[in-house]
Length: 168
Ligand code: S3P
Image (cartoon, rainbow, N blue to C red; front, side, top):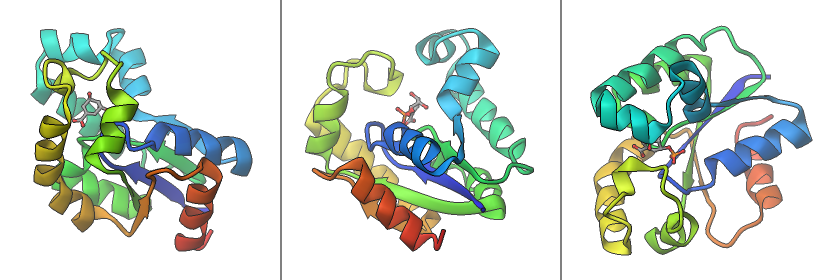
Protein backbone atom coordinates (compact mmCIF):
# COMPACT_ATOMS: atom_id res chain seq x y z
CA UNK A 1 0.00 0.00 0.00
CA UNK A 2 1.29 3.43 -0.74
CA UNK A 3 1.77 6.25 1.71
CA UNK A 4 -0.70 8.96 2.67
CA UNK A 5 0.44 12.46 3.58
CA UNK A 6 -2.12 14.48 5.50
CA UNK A 7 -1.73 18.22 5.03
CA UNK A 8 -3.80 21.16 6.20
CA UNK A 9 -4.08 23.97 8.67
CA UNK A 10 -3.32 23.56 12.36
CA UNK A 11 -6.30 21.87 14.00
CA UNK A 12 -7.64 20.42 10.74
CA UNK A 13 -7.58 16.95 12.30
CA UNK A 14 -4.39 15.53 10.72
CA UNK A 15 -3.19 13.79 13.91
CA UNK A 16 -6.61 12.36 14.75
CA UNK A 17 -7.13 10.99 11.25
CA UNK A 18 -3.58 9.63 11.04
CA UNK A 19 -4.07 7.77 14.35
CA UNK A 20 -7.37 6.33 13.11
CA UNK A 21 -5.76 5.02 9.91
CA UNK A 22 -2.95 3.59 12.02
CA UNK A 23 -5.31 1.79 14.43
CA UNK A 24 -8.00 0.68 12.01
CA UNK A 25 -5.99 -0.01 8.87
CA UNK A 26 -2.65 -0.99 10.35
CA UNK A 27 -0.76 1.73 8.54
CA UNK A 28 2.51 2.83 10.10
CA UNK A 29 2.20 6.24 11.71
CA UNK A 30 4.53 9.18 11.46
CA UNK A 31 3.70 12.37 13.32
CA UNK A 32 6.17 14.93 11.97
CA UNK A 33 5.98 17.38 14.87
CA UNK A 34 6.52 14.58 17.39
CA UNK A 35 9.51 13.22 15.48
CA UNK A 36 11.08 16.67 15.40
CA UNK A 37 10.46 17.20 19.11
CA UNK A 38 12.08 13.85 19.91
CA UNK A 39 15.02 14.51 17.62
CA UNK A 40 15.70 18.03 18.91
CA UNK A 41 14.75 17.26 22.53
CA UNK A 42 12.81 20.53 22.58
CA UNK A 43 9.17 21.52 22.17
CA UNK A 44 8.08 23.13 18.88
CA UNK A 45 7.68 26.43 20.74
CA UNK A 46 11.23 26.17 22.11
CA UNK A 47 12.63 25.39 18.66
CA UNK A 48 10.90 28.46 17.19
CA UNK A 49 12.08 30.60 20.10
CA UNK A 50 15.71 29.53 20.30
CA UNK A 51 16.54 28.47 16.72
CA UNK A 52 13.95 30.34 14.66
CA UNK A 53 11.27 29.31 12.18
CA UNK A 54 13.66 28.78 9.25
CA UNK A 55 15.59 26.19 11.25
CA UNK A 56 12.31 24.37 11.99
CA UNK A 57 11.29 24.47 8.30
CA UNK A 58 14.63 22.91 7.35
CA UNK A 59 14.05 20.10 9.87
CA UNK A 60 10.67 19.42 8.25
CA UNK A 61 12.24 19.24 4.79
CA UNK A 62 15.07 16.95 5.98
CA UNK A 63 12.57 14.67 7.67
CA UNK A 64 10.37 14.38 4.57
CA UNK A 65 13.32 13.70 2.31
CA UNK A 66 14.36 10.89 4.63
CA UNK A 67 10.95 9.23 4.35
CA UNK A 68 11.35 8.12 0.75
CA UNK A 69 11.71 4.43 1.56
CA UNK A 70 8.58 4.10 3.70
CA UNK A 71 5.60 2.01 2.65
CA UNK A 72 2.07 1.68 3.99
CA UNK A 73 2.63 4.75 6.15
CA UNK A 74 0.38 7.64 7.07
CA UNK A 75 2.24 10.88 7.74
CA UNK A 76 0.61 13.64 9.77
CA UNK A 77 2.40 16.73 8.45
CA UNK A 78 2.90 20.01 10.26
CA UNK A 79 0.53 22.71 9.00
CA UNK A 80 3.29 24.57 7.15
CA UNK A 81 4.75 21.61 5.25
CA UNK A 82 2.86 22.19 1.99
CA UNK A 83 4.18 25.77 1.77
CA UNK A 84 7.51 24.58 0.35
CA UNK A 85 7.51 23.14 -3.15
CA UNK A 86 10.42 20.81 -2.35
CA UNK A 87 8.31 19.26 0.41
CA UNK A 88 5.40 18.77 -1.96
CA UNK A 89 7.73 17.13 -4.50
CA UNK A 90 9.11 14.77 -1.85
CA UNK A 91 5.60 13.77 -0.74
CA UNK A 92 4.33 13.28 -4.27
CA UNK A 93 7.16 10.88 -5.03
CA UNK A 94 6.10 8.42 -2.37
CA UNK A 95 2.37 8.72 -1.91
CA UNK A 96 -0.92 10.54 -2.08
CA UNK A 97 -1.36 14.00 -0.58
CA UNK A 98 -4.67 14.56 1.20
CA UNK A 99 -5.72 18.05 2.24
CA UNK A 100 -7.96 18.09 5.30
CA UNK A 101 -10.01 21.26 5.23
CA UNK A 102 -11.96 22.99 8.01
CA UNK A 103 -13.48 26.44 8.40
CA UNK A 104 -11.63 29.06 10.48
CA UNK A 105 -14.42 28.80 13.08
CA UNK A 106 -13.97 25.04 13.37
CA UNK A 107 -10.19 25.45 13.58
CA UNK A 108 -10.52 28.09 16.29
CA UNK A 109 -12.80 25.83 18.33
CA UNK A 110 -10.24 23.02 18.13
CA UNK A 111 -7.06 24.98 18.92
CA UNK A 112 -8.16 27.80 21.18
CA UNK A 113 -6.94 26.23 24.40
CA UNK A 114 -3.60 24.97 23.11
CA UNK A 115 -0.28 26.73 23.65
CA UNK A 116 2.09 24.62 21.60
CA UNK A 117 1.55 26.41 18.29
CA UNK A 118 3.94 29.37 18.16
CA UNK A 119 2.28 30.90 15.08
CA UNK A 120 -0.98 31.28 16.97
CA UNK A 121 0.42 32.53 20.26
CA UNK A 122 -0.89 36.05 20.66
CA UNK A 123 -2.98 35.54 17.50
CA UNK A 124 -5.58 33.15 18.84
CA UNK A 125 -8.67 34.49 17.10
CA UNK A 126 -10.85 33.68 14.10
CA UNK A 127 -9.71 36.79 12.17
CA UNK A 128 -6.04 35.81 12.26
CA UNK A 129 -6.79 32.17 11.44
CA UNK A 130 -8.92 33.31 8.48
CA UNK A 131 -6.13 35.54 7.17
CA UNK A 132 -3.40 32.91 7.47
CA UNK A 133 -5.66 30.26 5.95
CA UNK A 134 -6.44 32.49 2.96
CA UNK A 135 -2.72 32.99 2.40
CA UNK A 136 -2.05 29.27 2.56
CA UNK A 137 -5.07 27.89 0.76
CA UNK A 138 -3.69 28.11 -2.81
CA UNK A 139 -0.68 26.02 -1.80
CA UNK A 140 -2.75 23.45 0.06
CA UNK A 141 -5.03 23.07 -2.95
CA UNK A 142 -2.18 22.92 -5.45
CA UNK A 143 -0.46 20.19 -3.43
CA UNK A 144 -3.54 18.05 -2.84
CA UNK A 145 -4.47 14.92 -4.77
CA UNK A 146 -7.63 14.87 -2.71
CA UNK A 147 -9.45 17.38 -0.47
CA UNK A 148 -11.63 16.14 2.37
CA UNK A 149 -13.83 18.37 4.53
CA UNK A 150 -13.67 17.70 8.25
CA UNK A 151 -16.19 20.17 9.72
CA UNK A 152 -18.66 18.36 11.95
CA UNK A 153 -17.72 14.92 10.62
CA UNK A 154 -16.63 11.77 12.43
CA UNK A 155 -13.17 10.29 11.91
CA UNK A 156 -14.60 7.10 10.46
CA UNK A 157 -16.48 8.96 7.75
CA UNK A 158 -13.46 11.13 6.87
CA UNK A 159 -11.18 8.09 6.69
CA UNK A 160 -13.66 6.23 4.49
CA UNK A 161 -13.56 9.12 2.03
CA UNK A 162 -9.76 9.19 2.12
CA UNK A 163 -9.39 5.46 1.51
CA UNK A 164 -11.89 5.54 -1.32
CA UNK A 165 -10.35 8.66 -2.86
CA UNK A 166 -6.86 7.21 -2.68
CA UNK A 167 -8.15 3.86 -4.02
CA UNK A 168 -6.73 1.98 -1.03
C1 S3P B 1 2.68 24.89 11.98
C2 S3P B 1 1.87 23.86 12.41
C3 S3P B 1 2.19 23.00 13.57
C4 S3P B 1 3.69 22.95 13.82
C5 S3P B 1 4.24 24.35 13.89
C6 S3P B 1 3.99 25.17 12.63
C7 S3P B 1 2.26 25.71 10.82
O1 S3P B 1 1.71 21.68 13.35
O2 S3P B 1 4.34 22.24 12.81
O3 S3P B 1 3.66 24.96 15.01
O4 S3P B 1 3.12 26.43 10.26
O5 S3P B 1 1.08 25.64 10.45
P1 S3P B 1 0.15 21.26 13.41
O6 S3P B 1 -0.45 21.60 12.08
O7 S3P B 1 0.20 19.79 13.63
O8 S3P B 1 -0.47 22.01 14.53
